[in-house]
Image (tube, rainbow, N blue to C red; front, side):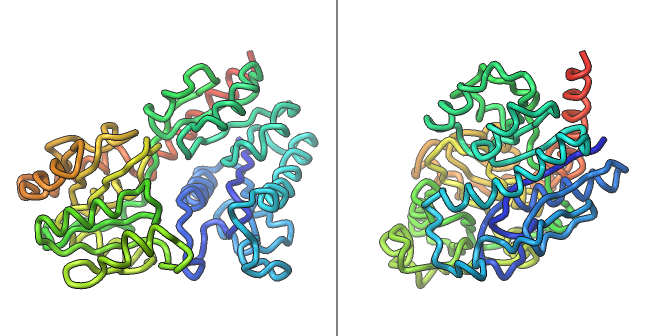
Length: 360
């Protein structure tokens, strides 16, 4: 198969550690492109300069928008106009080449930026949906419900609930390279929270759990900045004593943090589409204690690889019985359901299924 892929021009694909930005879809796209290329497919990965892959890389000689030499760090990432324009430079080139017969299928991640290109293309496009289907996304996707050459991949079954009647081709769970996340049978003595510093991730709840159980809590995430009101009001005042801030860490350091933890706390406050940190922790043998929101029930086996709870009190109770979880069961669960190879297998089948449907 001849496959074009694109995720973002904000950063290289995958991002370098120096970028200090959490952007899981870029890592997943990079892994998928390389693995599909290793399987003998002709994969063209579009991305900003610095993109590295076993696939053919097309960077259009464009540097990443983040810290672009003509913009610096002045861009407001809440203003999507500049981002949309920059990413559509890559997207328009993909569809220009597709019109010339270069690709059999196009796989894109930023749906709203590419969908108007996709509807006019004779080459089918598959979009992976990474975010919860909010009202504005539901509005956009509904507008194109009748376009049969557009296909969607959900990253959990629960993600589909707000909008079931669009052209979902399959659910493909995220997968990780298990060699990067080594297993440890030894349970550590601290709790771990790993996420972006936004209220929806519930780090303030994790802090309360640590305080009530008197167990150390290590917090890993994005850089702490004074402009982040959630960090300044809810997290920073608690740092000290049993609560420590580890910063944003490269994968090698994160895996060490995961495998030495007693449990990963995941007190999510929104309908999370997936939650990559859950499978990263379990791969290292560390159980997860999570609120019952979004995809959590699809990822954690309650009582076997962690605990699914409803509130703060439930999370405190779960921490006290975390010794009952078999760390080997956590690792085995990820090996059987969330490995990189499993993810690539599913996407390969998705592409084949789409191309068969297009021939009918």
